[in-house]
Image (cartoon, rainbow, N blue to C red):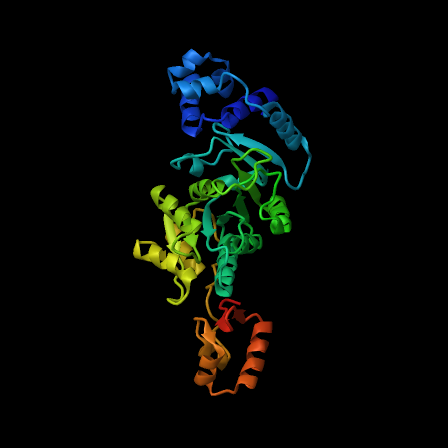
Length: 367
């Protein structure tokens, strides 16, 4: 994109009070962002309201600095993680997103832009998952990526991070849709993860450089996650959560919604159970997702089941899959507290058991 076109796009997108819908109408009427800016306010008022038309008369404060910063960001050479801006009408703009109800007008991208055209599935869930939930997110993402589905998520704490990390182990990799400018990483603890995704996957945002992590941006980001994907898999979620917003947006866009059931005692499973009652497809393995979506990409290897090992320690059988207290385990097994604690510590070190707050223990499947 040449500097003049970029400047026109930024003027349209960053002028307060204009909004995406008005910009779409102006582009349809005038053909290009340069033509919209060049038109007089009277001509624009014939297409949109007076307030929107008049807002574009004067360049907003700070636009020149943003334009210069964006050009400088684009010109920084990083062969492993190339940078680009992809507006509507660009051949690289993802067809799936274009066919969603509210596509962004321009994407900032860093990494493998070709992933925008791939078959993909969103994996979302709680920022505070159980140990089992995080393990499920990573395992499903890994198997689906190896089977040819690019994993889309929001690079948030918890399930999102586990899904991105798992997907990076597969050839189809991952797309992170973030709610900040691409010159920022949020949360900061994901700096190393963001670097890996930029080099081996793709990070995208509709927000200009310098945009901080505002709370209102994340529900907006969720519509892009849903729009990019053929379906959305919710791993764990509370009833009031952004993950359920993503699932609703996916359903409204005519995409599939999947949910993994959990313990009836876990607050993090209740959102999934709500989705299942509303008609989401219950899945227990990655193969369940693949059979439903039937991606067009070739699958060289079948996806493995994500579930408990066939040969288990008797203590694991006694644990079951719900969080349980030490006293309850002692009653189930007949073991004394000291012997039980020692056995649990060994299983915890092997990654088969997680210690939860409140002196609870939970079996971790799929390890």
